[in-house]
Image 1: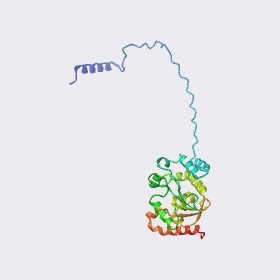
Image 2: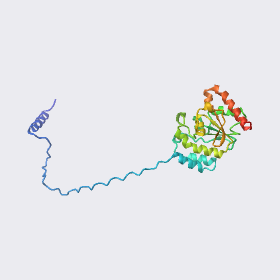
Image 3: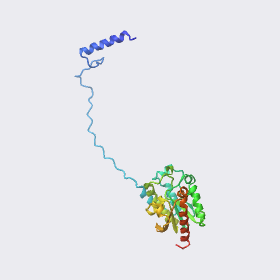
Image 4: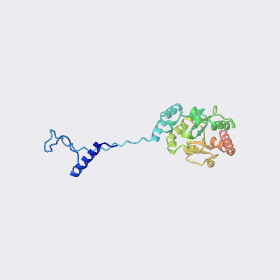
Length: 254
């Protein structure tokens, strides 16, 4: 139950409002005619802020070209890639996947990007697709231990094994081009659509495969990616024909 003091205070307030009171009055009176002891000087007009200096953006491709061009050997190129910080894929990857096989081998296989197994081991083509690749090579008496050198367009695994983005491929191309120059293969085997796009400027692996062309001044053979063959076993017939074509080329018969 509300107290009598509350109703008395409320009635007093209503009475003051009827008399015209519209603001609170302090306990001590204020003399409006008294000059204050100190008069604050008006602040000078602020100078207009200087226009922000525009930072010239760093071009990742230009940085990649300089880093790759400075590498004098494969170990130097690996170090340049490890130091390259302009590719976001590096932040989410466990390992740099540089290469496997025999440097200086006549055949250099260029894949697309590392998968989960490759990311964990730091080597290209070591998962199920890599095991199939080894069987394919063995069928024509070749192996990564003796006669093949292997790398990828991208050295870091894309998240969830998604397709490489055009800007990622663009900034890795200088490293790939320099990789080919330093490895000095006789023949390039370009595996998969994204590898064809990076080295040949073309897509459509079902149309390109089996047709000899040229990439970076070297004979190049586009082929199905082993991962594609795992999903489409019927395409192994075409892959076998491509392997025989590679074998014939290396023997001087094509």
